[in-house]
Length: 210
Image (cartoon, rainbow, N blue to C red):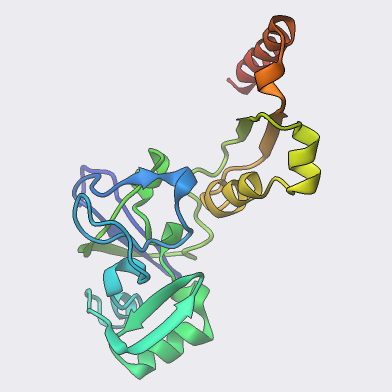
């Protein structure tokens, strides 16, 4: 797989699964933490992680092995399938040890803000902790949200739940830190002068980040 960006997942001996192209991609901000994308360009989602393949088998057998419905374990909001009870027990005892890097999404796709369905036969096993390596580590981010309601109402009454989910499940998961927030409320009734002040402030944030 030399000469092309490695796309995929990792584990302790690190597992990296890949894809030949950015197929069935979706915006990173809208997706769950675990890859449940189906194969194909318009496959949609299922409730099963990494197309139903046994993540433990990549380490125990050195090859992709399809999991069975009889050996299923729910973790991180997805069903993980295994080829045997022994593999299920290994995963259940220490999911982080065997769980794929980047939640099972293609690492290259994550770096391009696309979450991509994998091709299970394209994989690589390396040393290292799968959750220790973050594809976008060393980068920071600022989330800017505009809304019709007062920003304080969104932050304190609604707890800014969607922003927090984005920070935790996507940006933080791939190693982005620190993450800053700018919440701009009452945009529908905002006068031209206030809009200009906000635009000036956002440009300053952008200059400071480069």
